[in-house]
Length: 337
Image (cartoon, rainbow, N blue to C red; front, side):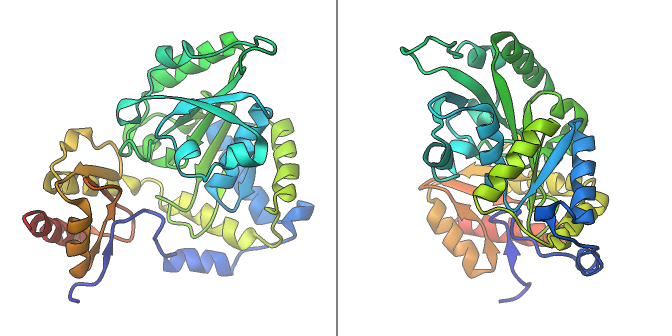
């Protein structure tokens, strides 16, 4: 196979760069279950500050951070509202229901975009033993299955103010919030102010091998730390992973704009209007997605077939401009059959 592999299945497939590996090797570490890992503490303090919250908690996965964040806001038998394509209900294997007894009710969102007034109209107040009470609303930004769409800050702010009026909390699944920040120019603190709990991932666009963080108030994060241990998520000298996250924040954040430009380049060949591609995810509707994915794979370009007609490509730091041009060429020929 000539030209090497171009893997566009996800931005989770990146390998640590040489500089990141050096940061990992040099990390000062301690026992994080005892709260004694200085590199973890530095990362947690930094991310909490970036998002304007009091405290943060490092977790091995974004799914665990989401699980903990929602559980802080929703008691067993209460309700979480989210859109039907949200990661928390589509791609976390029912964890919120099976582990924490959370029920969910969903709305339809075109391309994953939030309509705050529509969602607020769904909120069910406490009605005693008759109707499940809405305790929280979850929003995803950027929206994975919506095609990397960025939620307008005005809608997030409207949702936040309306939720406060109704006594309902907000959880922000910000696995790719870094992408939304770079694409929109909206500050991380503005996004952070729109939610009670926020999850951000390091292992997607930022290219770290492992890790996410949950941010919230100091009291909530203390409770989440206990539950993380209860679920088997306490790790020891985890500073070697936190160091990768710190390095990523220093060196890989602003370059996300390159991934967004590469995604718009891919949009053309997949029949998607580049103006609708906000970040690094392109979702195309093609005649036979599995056949196109298989044909492209034979030439060393990997994309995901999410259904009979849905093809997804995700750009990231391991695919440079030459790789994107190669993918455009291969996918163009595969689409022609």
